[in-house]
Length: 95
Image (cartoon, rainbow, N blue to C red; front, side, top):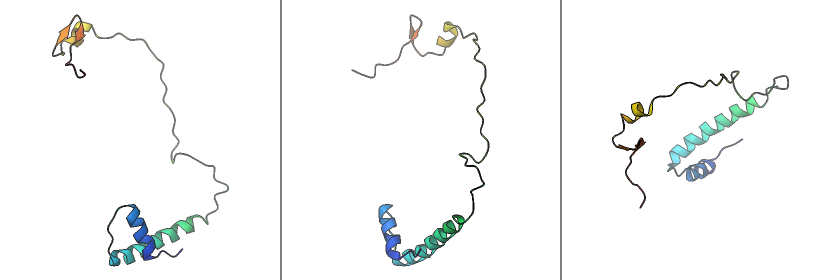
């Protein structure tokens, strides 16, 4: 596929980039080589390869839910800058 400087300028405009004429000529060649390489990849026979969604096998690690003890309320409230009746006091943010 032939990439023109107009194609480069159009893509640059979509990306809101300023591209000079010299940069457009250079980028046209680079974009064309990238597309040529991608076209070569489409020629590879992948009919015998199973589709995957990850490069490596991904497996969930499940653990059994266990009920454990919690911290005492008094210990947690020791870090509170202000408290009242066993609850945190925070500044009012909505009037």
